Image (cartoon, rainbow, N blue to C red; front, top):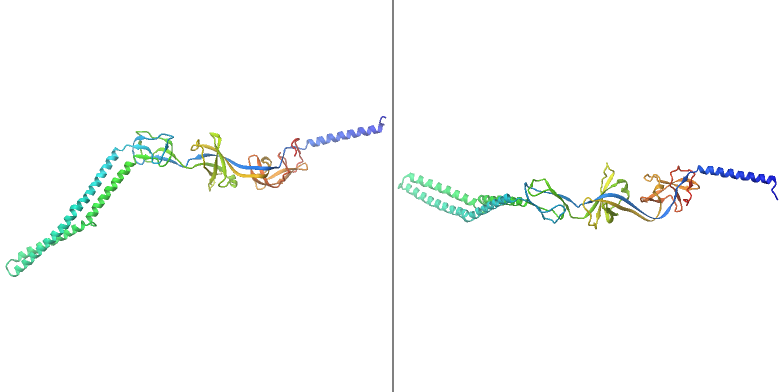
Amino acid sequence: MALSRTPRLALAVAVVLALVAAIGWFLYARNIPLVDIAPVRSGRLAQTVVVSGRVLAPAKVDVGATITGRVQRVAVDDGAKVAANALLIELERSELEAALAQARATERAAQTRITQWQNVAAPNARELVTQAEANLRVAERDLARQEDLVGRRFVAEARVDEARRTVEIARSQVATARATAAANRPEGAERQLLDDQLAQARAARAAAEAKLDQTRILAPANGVVLDRSVEPGDIVQPAKRLMTIALDGATRLTALIDEKNLGVLTIGQQALAAADAFPGHRFEAVLEYLAPGIDAQRGTVEAKFAVAKPPAFLRSDMTVSIDIAVANREQALVVPTGAVRDATSNTPWVLVLRDGHAVRQDVKLGARSATEAEIREGLEPSGVVVMSNVPPGTRVRAHEGRRP
């Protein structure tokens, strides 16, 4: 049976009202911003600090000459591995060899003078004392006779005066002989003078040998020749660099790290490094040193890493990339780093989706990676964070297909 006029009118009004309500809701919903959201995830989070550094040679030594001379021979070339005390450069030696021969001859002459003193001078000095004392005794006896004869008036007084003069001369000769003998004792001045001359000769010989040795420039330790800047025939002088050698030793890496990472760095942390020239070959390193000071201009701290098993391709000053493992959380609440606001401040926060609104929620951060941040406090595992940038308290709606 056909509907009466009144029910049909009521139905039409209801349809119109529903359409108006739908249009109103549509227009209202259009003014609610669409936002990207992400769930709070529970899982593993590894935090790393990635820095660029260089291979640090154990030591670089600049090798040079200590005397002026002409280069006679260069025994090694760039890139050569050298052992400790291996010959690197040899200077001309003829003039210094002649000086050494002269110094050795002077030393032998000084030794010969000591031998002569032992065999001749010292015994002669003792004999002179004996002779002088004997002459004095003869002169004293003759003086006594002359004085006796003068008393008997057998000789003139002049004979006594002559005898007295002879005694005085003999006494003077005894004193001189005794002084000479004292000087020729083993502890006397003559022997000391000879010993001093020998010591001077030996010192001159040692100096000549040292100068001759300086014509042979040797490697200070095992290493590799990085640079050679000398050729045979060159005139070299002290303080001029002739070669640079990288000494063998433990391989280390050095890097400048932003000071903002100091809070997560600890001596002993493991790292993975890769040379820029060989990015596919990663090797292990350990953080072993953090500089006590900060570079004020760069805002960085110097760090050094030990490499227990360096790959064969590593070279001094080679550029490397270093990933430092500063944290490893097996069960952590994590959100995308883009969801965290004021992450570097003392009060980081996020926007959570709650009852259709973006609500501010203060959080406490833990470990962070390049894409995710650990939430220590402030969120639950079932929570949802707003990724889009909207003011706190804004009514929002999530993109379709991105709801939790």
